[in-house]
Image 1 (tube, rainbow, N blue to C red):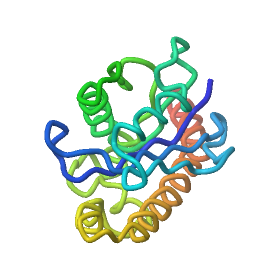
Image 2 (cartoon, helix red, strand yellow):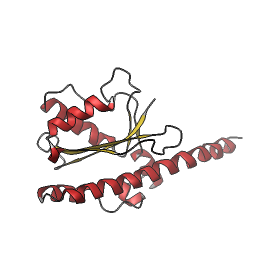
Image 3 (cartoon, rainbow, N blue to C red):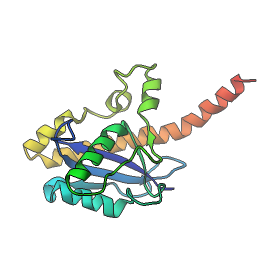
Length: 182
């Protein structure tokens, strides 16, 4: 089983009209949540949306018959799912479906950590992440690609820190819960 941090950046929120401008993924240890390889950032402005989707499909294992070849780990993976599915089809590729095979979405954990409230259960509210993705389309329009990369790198760092922390703390909560059953 190979877990991968997965995220994308887009020009907006509508997968029918907005495009994917980056796909970023990084292999992570399935027992510690720590990175085991480099962060890969596929950039649309260096080629095209079609080309980055092609590279992602060919190099990641996302469409492998082995459902454990690429296990996405992220925050609110429904967003990635909707965009990858719609934009793959629009660009002439086989549908990318990340929610009908193994995946780990930490959004549910974030909501529970936020006392069940959806509002305030975002990665930027729960971690040291600075800002949200709403600035990325502006950076893209202004061709401020270095700012997009900086945003992605900072977001990835905070996600990985949060993920690895959960790998340490969640087993402790399970033990505490088991003791409460006695």
